[in-house]
Image (spheres, rainbow, N blue to C red):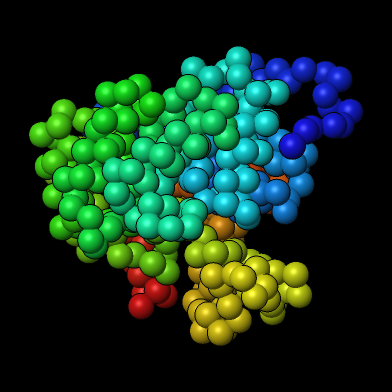
Length: 337
């Protein structure tokens, strides 16, 4: 895909003071500092979306000090299109800033037909990374994740493939996503034995989904691995979007969405109570929800999606108030229960 618009006339130059206001947190015991808020390209960056809008969001992110862009082989739709669009924008705007960026990709879910386009075999993972690098126009990714556990493939094979990617110079670090605590512990031991830098576990985490608190965060601390949280707003429930009803064009009204009207209706009273507290804190609910996750010392970054530059700016304002009183945390727990 090509970018054809008036902004092509003027070459993009990043905001000189982009690093002054962003908070950066260390990922576990590694040397990597991540922006407290990172940009996920799961939605809004595929061929079905506006390439120019995607370009504006990415430019805005970098100008805000967001150095970490998170992709996966099957992000789109269609599969692969988010990486291809990112590659188009990268070539135009970000190539000269490559050493200032921390770019991620993943593989583990369905990507192509047949027995070699899914899960965690060595063949699938290495082929997928090669394809991702071509789509994005990169020589390497900064981190490559196995996107989900594979119940059939030996963990030694999957982790061995990740280790070889680092040895081949195709990835600098490796990570895993959606692994339970016991699986994470086993993966960490294998990667340590292979002398491979395992620095991040990407996990779903929000006020409405706190499973990582039941052992995973402790496991990550034990092995010196950071956590990067995705879906921090519970697919939009932890915003003020649904307080006065479900908008016609909202995600909850779309058939392909992970969110639905029943889920929204079941949680709306909790959302309203949390929103009241956020207002007292002089924050939007979405900002409070992000700040609440960042209070965890093991969380290195929170992944947010954005359909516009303005939405991204609003999310980054969460960093203006990251502290919680004991009374606030107690009230949040009471509301959530």
